[in-house]
Length: 272
Length: 253
Image 1 (cartoon, chains in turn green, blue):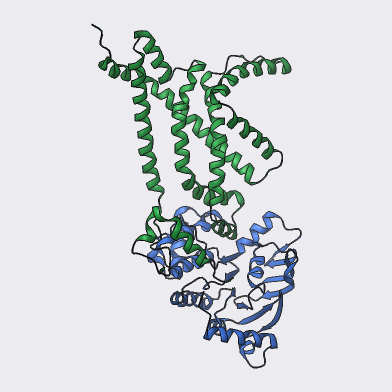
Image 2 (cartoon, rainbow over the protein chains, first blue to last red):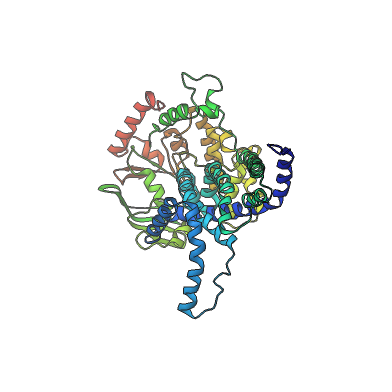
């Protein structure tokens, strides 16, 4: 008699799926790295209010946020051959219209989406960097680029990192959309496995477990990196003890907003 | 030679510096004093173009930088020969004391990491903080942070050291150590311009006192004359206010 749930099959499918994990990870990593770099560029364009470029990037971001990634993927996969044919026609070249691999198209598509979302995160992080540190760098004689590279970006990275890790985790899962352009990563292969044995439930359960495990690993790695980026907190940021100060309350990270803003407002009263 | 020629600066309609010219002699300590809003900090910040003057020239050695025609390269060059110590320290929060001091040596003076760190340690030692090299700013007291700020500025071997109210953001008990450090630096012959409200310190240390009011130099004299009975009436009024403040309100920040 057939079993209702074939438990051993779950494990077997999970093992069968292992070889496809690198495809999923490669898609997510390429898309996130490229997307974050592009997001930084978009953020800088917006902050510097570069004429023309900032308008173009605003429209681009609006489009990328306003359309589903699946639609973008389908659109791009069809648009690329058309664009290549058009280029061949216009410039007399003879590129292969189907020469660009679906993996590259998918990676670029996801990178663009990532850029759109990360650009706002990165912009906020860049703006949050203490102006006074930037001024100190300028006073040493650093160029704007040196200041950006050595002071602004390292400081902003700490702020943006947790959100960017979230984006990466999202991208791990979003990469499953790539099956529509015939990229076989874990989700696509699970579908193939399920179709082969008619054990779809077991195949997808194995897939879900793999995604979950991957995510947990990424979270743990991110936590370790965040710990490394941590710098010692001021031992009692209020140099003058506040009347309501209880021992240790000033250094508890979670309780920061209220006491810290109170302290800041106190300190801004220092006369110029 | 460091000189300012006809420096003017306005923020909107407000004239902060009004056609100001002066020269800083090599090895001299020039104190800039005056009431709040007199343009003291702006004057200092105009010297290294952190605030770009509307007009006038800043001359450091062979380099003459005109406010109206200055290129980015000229401004960077100017900043290489001047160094600023800020009221709020403005240390790089993610860098240790040593890295703060080494930063300019690495990036601006082009030393390799090992040389830069050796030199940075020498500078930290000058301000008595070699033992705190590995500390982050958050682990240092305000006075220690400011001394790191001084070491960071000195590491650039500036033609003129600019100190913008270096002790105004400090708790009273921490002011002494910073003034002591500045005194030591001055004794080594470092040319400096210092905006300060520490009148006793100014009197002891300065070779020359500039009294600034309304963006103009009202009095420019040695400290004996500045603090003497024959001072300019505006100066006397200021000092009078000041002594009142000394007795009552000075530290109620």
